[in-house]
Amino acid sequence: MRSALTLLSVTVIVLAQTVVVNRLPFGALSDGGPGPDLAVAAIVAIALTTSPSAAAGWGFGMGLALDVLPPADHAIGRYTLVLCLAGYLVALVHRNTGAPGAVAGRTSRWFAVGVVLVTSAGVGLAYAGLGLFVGDPGTGLADIAVTTVVGSALTLLVSPLVTLPLLWLRELMVDHEFATVQGPMSPRGW
Image 1 (cartoon, rainbow, N blue to C red):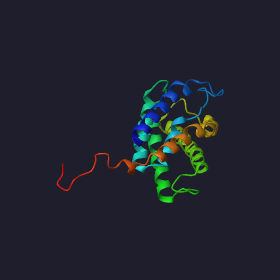
Image 2: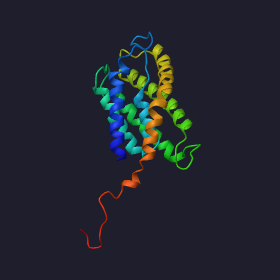
Image 3: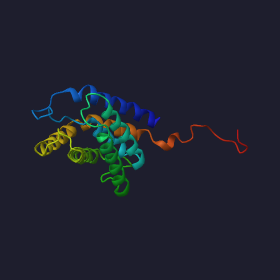
Image 4: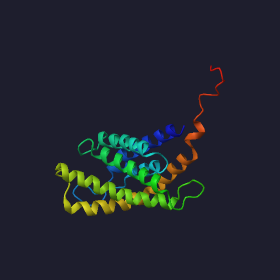
């Protein structure tokens, strides 16, 4: 049930990102300017409530969908790699250090919003760095700082609308509650 609800939420977030957010004009930069990144806000909520490998898988899926769906204007795989690494690293750091301010096994909302800010800045820098590495003509050193700062700030502004509800939903549906969906087993088998 948790995976099905996460899949539905991720699908809605990816469609909202590609259909609405990516088509809005933000700023006067060369490519129209950065906008809020709903996928980063969603991958943080998923990474804070799952294992590193599962978070990497969700990041890969969201990144691939965003790479393929129009209006993608970059090489396929750039966003996939960056979101996959972001999900993995956030879940790995969270699992190894724990969440400060966690109460009764729930992640602090302020901590989640802070992680969105740090992850958004990291994703922006990694995406721009990968663009410089592969020689993307749309990536210039002058725009990287502005794009990263503005994109992180806008992602931070929308994170209470994306991260917090998804985090609440994933914490509400715990995996171990659904571990015995197959039903009881008798000592002699079926």
